[in-house]
Image 1 (cartoon, one colour):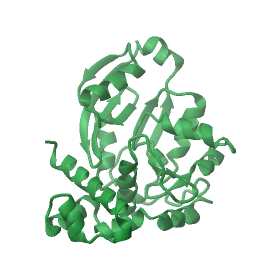
Image 2: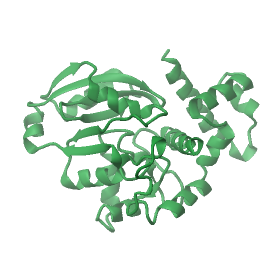
Image 3: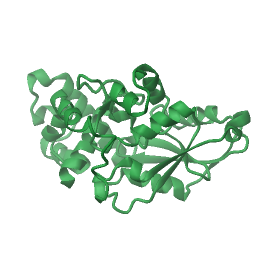
Length: 283
């Protein structure tokens, strides 16, 4: 049994899956509540506490029509006009407070033997994550869906000769604060990433997609300066080493369909809906 936050996420994810698989039948609140083994009253209360909106409102944020509207309204100017600049709270753009530093060849030479990496497992609204940091910033964040042992093995395979310590540090704590509902006091988050110049450019461009916003693979490629390289950009997105902080979940198909996600389509749906709900409740 996980924490209450973990349990609530699993119930929300199960409810969203049930809604989407049975949408033609227009399931009632009572049907979904029974599916997640809660009374209608407790399911509604749990869902609103977790998401900030009702299940019906949340589903509207996951519709193709809503996605198309977001793309239409923000796609043309998303990267050129930082219209959220100067605003506080959840309207702040990611690139205002997340900075990327690429690792030097020497830092990941010989399997990262010069790197000292701290790591912890932490609870988030979307499941348990493994978050790791160097003295310069976050170098890895991944959902530990297959258990802590597997998650740690995946981290150490990237830097097999680094020195690992399971300990909490301020860099990790500040990064995890992004999962809270209030960003007004969020300090700058630094990422210390291993990647090619092309990959880092794509990841930096992703940071310009604001919370609650969406973009497409072709738009992202164009904004990164690689027009026509949608497939290569998609590969770079798939190799993103830092879940959520680098928001690859905000890249969808041009049709408005949400598409695939490295950490699961269900989780992508839940994250997009959660971010949209935060934006609407903050207005």
